[in-house]
Length: 275
Image (cartoon, rainbow, N blue to C red; front, side, top):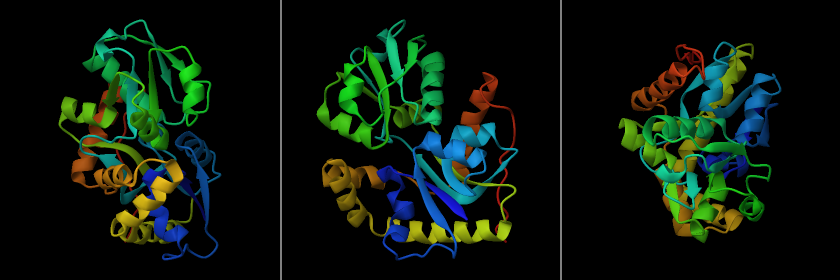
């Protein structure tokens, strides 16, 4: 059983207990760490059996994947780690270069929806050729705005080098009134159902420990990122790792809007049977 996990601190509440040996992986299971985009590709290619993946990639590959119940990375308002940093107001970005991180496809799709349907602008999108976590390299590229995700977004916000910052979770909430689901956990349909259920239960048990120990995780996150402990604690505490009907309403609405633009196929959400 190969289980994927993102190396960003936003996954610490789900994997922290496993890392500490508080919750054991199922026998024979192993964790594989990567960026969201890397894990998306590995799961679709069959190199992983279970993984956290970008929500949009589940929609694109729903015929090969099943959602794991009760588990996601979402926000109901500001997310803090997915933001557009801009040198000018967002409504003035038409025809100006906006750099996009290749690390998160869901965030890119959300930004494109906001530009098209909310801000009514047509920027010149360009993929950042620099490593998304290398803020100095990103700053050297020609651009008026840049989409930054994960730990780097927290660090860049602390630097205050851009005049404007737009939190994409907050912008979605203002637009729709719904939570936004950035990532889900999914399994390949061809994987052993029994093994997947064991992996799912392990992740849920680890999440329960993590949510009860956010102070410890925030201290570790601060050491890993250089971001203040209080900011890390506020960030982790502001994320939601559940997948309730409220979250599913937001996820379905996002998929509906993407399907209307032909970005993902129409389809229903299908879950692993846990009983």
